[in-house]
Figure 1 (cartoon, helix red, strand yellow):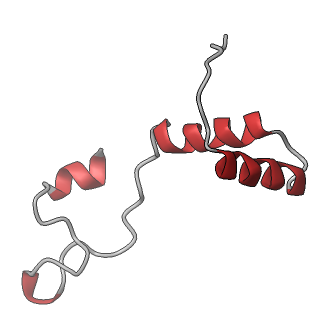
Figure 2 (cartoon, rainbow, N blue to C red; figure 1 turned 180 degrees about the horizontal axis):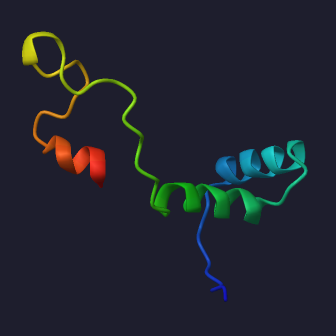
Length: 75
């Protein structure tokens, strides 16, 4: 199911959308829908790729300092 809505787009933005849609062989609707979906769809959690604990038991660079490591690893 979809919902039809009307928005006012400035002329220069509409021209840029029209040019990009033509360059990508798609529609303005597809460009706008894709942009809205990428902004509002939930993103999957990022995998932990580095150790959370560095040398001498100190938190490693990039480790969450205000989160429980258990929650990060097993969420």
